[in-house]
Image (cartoon, rainbow, N blue to C red; front, side, top):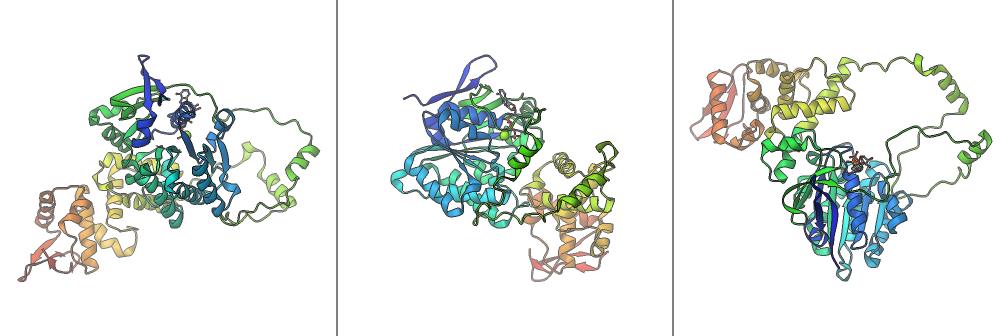
Length: 486
Ligand SMILES: Nc1ncnc2c1ncn2[C@@H]1O[C@H](COP(=O)(O)OP(=O)(O)OP(=O)(O)O)[C@@H](O)[C@H]1O
Ligand SMILES: [Mg+2]
């Protein structure tokens, strides 16, 4: 039986194939911005290979349930089962080699992560005689394997990341081949991304993701720009199951449809008020039983009178007041929070300040914070403070350090703050390795030059005592780090 499927065509009309047998051994990573066509691509892959290989789809949006009609996938509604049942289902899927879609769209994000973890864990733990090959497709993989702590609970993140790591790093022996898609490579845990040897990279706007995508494709950085110009449904592919050199591919059509479509106008239902009331209230007293993935507490019930009054008080849409701009103080706190979150990300100091600033403004916009009046210098200085663990630069404790920092050039500010902080806390000065990381370099000589520079400017004084221990003083602040073996 041939295990090749056609995923699409080059712009010249040449068919591009994916070798499913090879894919099972070498996994696939898909990246592209929202709307670039990742889910369409996954659907094409699933449809074309449905008859060839068992498929398990982890579907956070409930996009893939339509595969059931045409290809007979069993849809498992994640919200309808408890933990033990999900685990049992996972085990049976391996036993019976069933193709399934685990739809998680009815769950809150924490529960989506826990449910997927439980399910993947059960697939992973199947007994050896059931290690049949299966594609395990995970859309929005950054949600299940995030690179940094976010708004979800630590427990959800831990179990979910663990399950995804098992899938990508140790699944192959057990027959499980991960196919994962993400909007942003930077958001996806590195160890999870690193295990895929096949890539399909779609349109990507952010420099940081574009550069990583280009790196994975083995393209030179100056060629990376073309990733920004890809059209919807167009991807660059590379890997043992696709092609030995990067190829451009226009993903082919699909037979089933996504559940979610771009919202358009839909005729209103014609049911009478009475029928509608009946529809809305039928069986309302029946509580679903889901004790093991608890949902957040329901919102307090508002009685109809109050609700009607509230609605009446709002007036017609046109008269509604504009949403007030957040207060400057509120803005500042939210920006500081974003800076602190960015500073927590691995390797952030090794990215260009333009990329970081761009990332920052996007995050601000996503939170509805206006970035008017904010420039790259302000950003760099705020980010330096965040890197040094100065969580709120307006805190009085830091006033003197921040004032002194005005004499320090932007790029030297983060290491300077780190040294100043250590001195204020009476701790040893961070070693050259730490300073290099904060400075965004791998060269110890650059760190030495930086220290020399700060010392020449009188901002720091480096002393080595008789026993050879080094301490760094800040004469303006009257503080010195604890001595440490140089
Ligand atoms: N190759 C293609 N041919 C035809 N239509 C496509 C193709 N790729 C994507 N589309 C259409 O473009 C729209 C967006 O695609 P899709 O939902 O796959 O994007 P996505 O990358 O998954 O976005 P998101 O990250 O927001 O989920 C869909 O309506 C899809 O049908
Ligand atoms: Mg999608």
